[in-house]
Length: 260
View 1 (cartoon, rainbow, N blue to C red):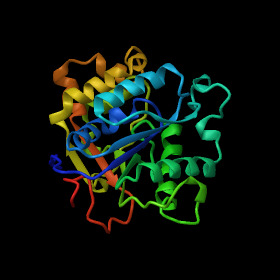
View 2: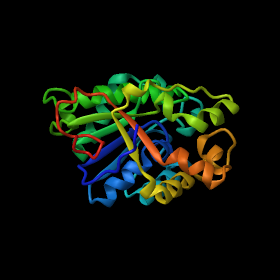
View 3: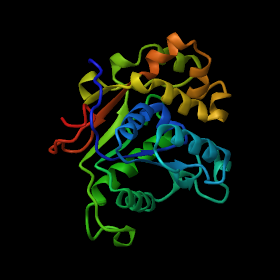
């Protein structure tokens, strides 16, 4: 798979589980789109809007040009104190999650929706899996007039992409994750619809990742793992982003140049 650069782009909304997922999985694509003048935004499912992770997310989105945080405010599956008084994302009713996401889709009116893959990325985090499930349902529901009528006027994004890693693209990252006891769940190469070279925005992406200071200071989270690597090892790991397409793919909108 040869990475491709992206020319002019349509509007884009990312839907991710935690603060830092947007920077790690799609920071380059978000930065490229914003640089082209396209509207970009991010919805984050977990952590309270008044938490330290929310402040870090705000800093990262400013670096990427992706607007202000849009946070659903559920608790992280592994950190219940991340949103005091709120249920964990994995325990919330799926219909409640879908309605919340439909509201953001209709407000932003993106042409492309990005989220996690069905595995929940390489590590299979339950919050990633739950976010994937809700985002897929919301993608289809957002364009239906009689679904969630109180969530705004219908809007149907043209394409739904999931951030992923193909078997051939795991490389050094796989060893780094297994070293700290994490899973490595990749997809067959043929599942990848867009392989995006984001090296032109690498400094921006890395700065956004480092904006998640509390994660970069810890040993097991990916920002912390990456921050301990020399640049010549780290840069190839984050310079390419992979996506699989989840909708029917009948419209000429994509991440491979955004006009496939």
